[in-house]
Image 1 (cartoon, helix red, strand yellow):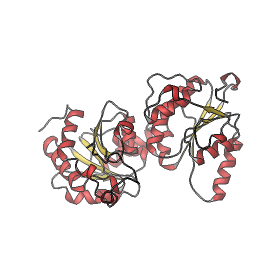
Image 2 (cartoon, rainbow, N blue to C red):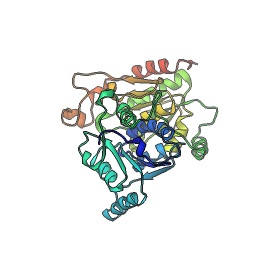
Image 3 (cartoon, helix red, strand yellow):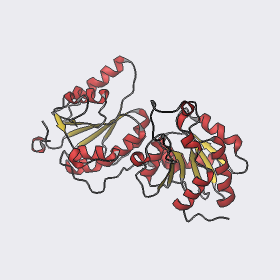
Image 4 (cartoon, rainbow, N blue to C red):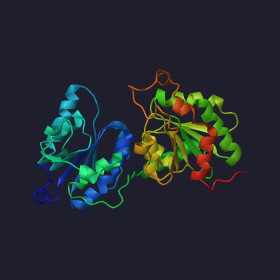
Length: 351
């Protein structure tokens, strides 16, 4: 079936959206939640994600329930699939398109199992929608296009992330305990990236000292789980700037980010998360194509050197990049970032 039969959807339908994968992908998917709820009045909307993305979705006002799939033992996974079946969803939308997402969709045995017509596992769906006529260009366009084909209307779709009051309270305490008061001006450096996509630690340190000398900004270093070593490489190289380091959950990090003047980071999930919060962000791109993966925000600047070999992938990447010396990132200068900061936050004044 290639059309979505809205006339057959029961009143107050139970809807499940499956969106596994990374934080950035899930941030994009938040653009469809409110339009779906408006299009299906009285519906109960559940979103299924993986643990790193749970905090992106769990406090969205139009999400009634957030499920979290963990890659544990087979017994756990079989039990999880059974519970999906037992919930008796009316509509299940696979926005993941991988094998696991398609199998989850099929396991629900929902009356309407929706997915992309040309997905590899499209046989798991009984509503197969094609949307090439909508000419999607960016990743968010593909997610919105699938939902549009269900008859859902959109006006200026954009991601939206919501931070809880509890996370805001915890953020206040974390900042205070790390020497940053409500009156302090600070920016965030988030150096987390894969080995072949990192800016040098010494440049982060030079930038920190420059921002302090020019704007009296404190520096807050943050990171994702297991990335503390990247902050440890930067801190000894900072000469003058006052700095702090905080590693915490994504909701609390979001609340902290909302208090920052701006963020400097690599292309990745946190960049998209920051953009969705409306905070100015400078994203450094290397191997990925910024024309596709740029942050969706008017308060974002992309730094990209556009080498002949970039964008690339694991098969075309040079050995020196795999060894941790990516030319596309190392050509980015402290001045590049400094000029971007002046553009993105013109109200900053030198002392």
